[in-house]
Length: 195
Image (cartoon, rainbow, N blue to C red; front, side):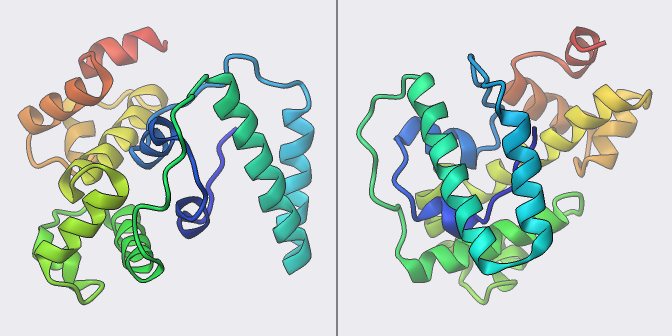
């Protein structure tokens, strides 16, 4: 199941640091003992969202929070939860930055133009982003691009070079460095392991 949640909602809950960083860094988190009821939950959550009623959305988010807390418990992340890393004002800016990156990560982007999207000075944008996500804007951007490339490697027969360019990397070498750093294997080895 793939779950996309409001970033502001996630940022304002207290999560153990390893879990928060993993989620914000787009790491794949697998529940070692997935519940047979998960399918029913996801069907219900989808129905709740389809009705577009505030009460249904509120209940769904409470249930998602409970399910995620069960996941965290199973992952044995016993570190003390942290307070939110940013103020509500900063969180709003960070959410807008993350939203912009999620929509435009395939494009060639530079820090000044990213920061300009939320009317922030580039240094301040980088500071609050790293404080919240634990990675720089460029590291996060490359994480999004690698995640896109992973999908293409599994679902298409495109060459690695085509995937690198389609995923927003300016060169194959830049793609290989980031892919190996984030996945621990080459793109070809990743593709072979999932086919």
